[in-house]
Image 1 (cartoon, rainbow, N blue to C red):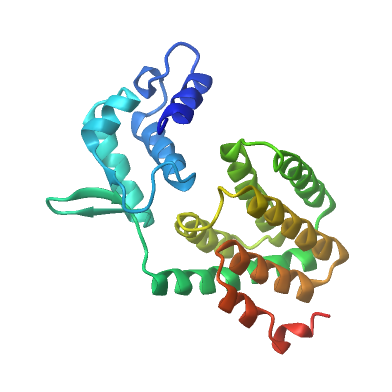
Image 2 (spheres, rainbow, N blue to C red):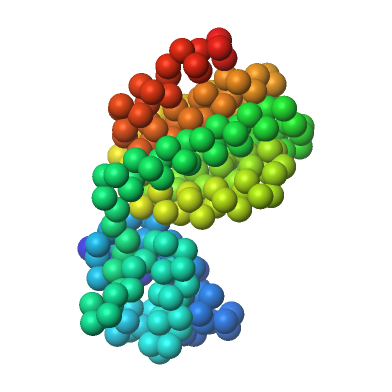
Length: 241
């Protein structure tokens, strides 16, 4: 059961073989992308050991590309490699989670504010298409596709904001915070896309302050941090209304 969805996806992604070793792109990149997706989707849980031998067998590759991919993921902060223990999916303390959520909320708020100021019709149309598809899929069980669309929405919003430095900072932080965000609950998924819709309406309206406030609230809500969410709704943000 643990690997059923993963093995099915591999079969869909390849034409003649479900093993990554049968494909022609650089193996380390393929393994890196495959492991990152399994971690960020929650299939490999925080604290779970990542055994090179088992992973190489599952993916149909030697241990070397698996080892290199794990090192790259460690550099991204979503894997921890310790002497004699090996690699595990990163797990965070409550304090670390709070700190990262605070930073991400601040950056996403700035991202939405810039998007509202610089909104481009073509980019907005792309956001609307992603929003429509994500909203439609909330009634289905394709968590992998919904997670990918969620990332697409935030990346597309970043394209509207047009600040490459900000996007680079947020991309790394999004991957780390994805490890503890609630993404496998249908009610939360529906709320997630309702919040996306509200952010997009503010962006389209050119209301930078409201877009900023909604984006910060969205992060706190997704991380399920009520105290932080309450803080994000203090009078300092009420000027947006």
